[in-house]
Length: 192
Image (cartoon, rainbow, N blue to C red; front, side):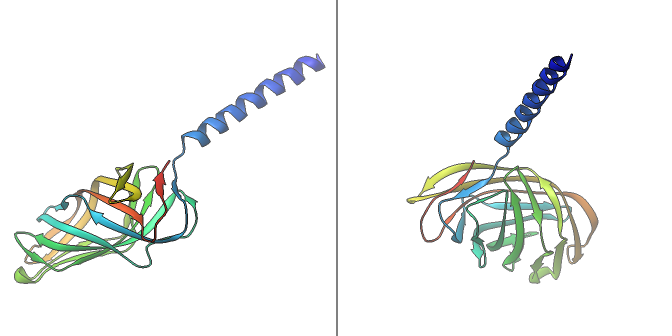
């Protein structure tokens, strides 16, 4: 009887370890060959849609500190500057945003984003929020940089319009756009 109990415990332990190993194997992370500053570029238009209309930016870059500080991580925080933007059919000021991307496919907006359109006296406010879905990743080599293509198709974003583009606070906003992120001083950046 004692042997049967020990055998049962051994089988349970093996099954428990298999579950833990399989959960660990399916978890994703960002993996860098070295630490350092990150760079990024838009691969297509970055489009944020609100109840007030569309905001489209054709360029983006990372502001510092947007950097890799550990070689493997499940989350990466970046500061983005969107440029060449139009909003609600008028020219918009450059837009600053701070995000934390999860290797599992979500993103958090870490600080309030303000979209200003001076020509119509408009401000669209996007408060800190998240995690929001969905972000997908693909490893990509571009211009001799080994990096990650980030594909955003995010929904349920909360925003509110004031002034010339006033609209009530709502949570139906979307964000789409692809960008490429790499290590500024060389090395590889991957999603695994």
